[in-house]
Length: 429
Image (cartoon, rainbow, N blue to C red):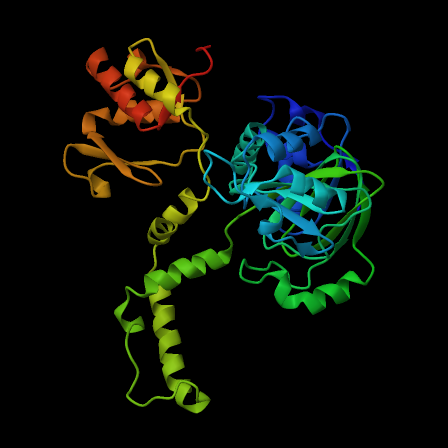
């Protein structure tokens, strides 16, 4: 495995497709998808070691989060020589006017960090605006939910023993140098319920052997690890800060789970067994098992993709939040919208528009959203599609399919109030 340079055009806003992914890998997105995604580790060296990832989170930003943002658990963890420090040892009351008991106490974090503990900031895709924007774009680039944690490790320290994750990760080195030792999986492609703790002995044995990759990550370097790959990291000579982007992609097992749920609707698969049957006896189980497998096989041959997709949709749609909105500004925009107002779709929001063929009452269309369904008169369908599929800001007065500006303004205000559309941030070209 060689160290190669990350694409320089990856950092240009509005640049080539999949801009966030291009910041993380040294190959074209298509080559990454074919040769590495879910298969092989990839080390990518940063071309500009001073600014590659510092715009996302810096050491000063970490101090800001720890000291002035009222951080609470579980957004902070401390790890000391392989042991996760209990939250009660670094949190406490928020003081007068903040009646909570688990606020991070900066002086206790200082004591732990100074003695060698690694600071782990969790869920930064919900806390820190630059990472929220980056994680949202990376999720769109990959078609999978993304979470972001940060790890600040003191000099010559190691926060966690060798382990594996049950999701793919991108490691982005922000500051300092860290030695990474990478081994191939003891359990390829583990599921979420198959965490490394259940195979600690195997993991330790493999970790004692020759690593697949032994490298010092420098600022600007990136490392991709498929789920299951063993890894450990140790700071070298100075404090280090890196980001870990966890990719929560669904697996084939998600389809199995969906099918298992749908199977309950099939009568032959709900049938009971003869009275007195002992399912723990292989001899008694042989015939019922064969009959059940045959019934399952027959039923599986009738399952339609649309039925499985409908079952999976709530899980998929709710896994990633759309781009944040500003509630006060959004309310003001909705109240003040007119024909000249520019709106655009809320990025990252999943939706589907159904008509009568989708079980909607005659004369209505239904906008299906992750957490609710909003209905409109059927004559709004063309305007809804135009507003929600636009690549550029849309002038409310230009929404198609409606008779007059009054109807267009009423619709636009509704879309803004429902947080489906947002006020445009850029002018029409």
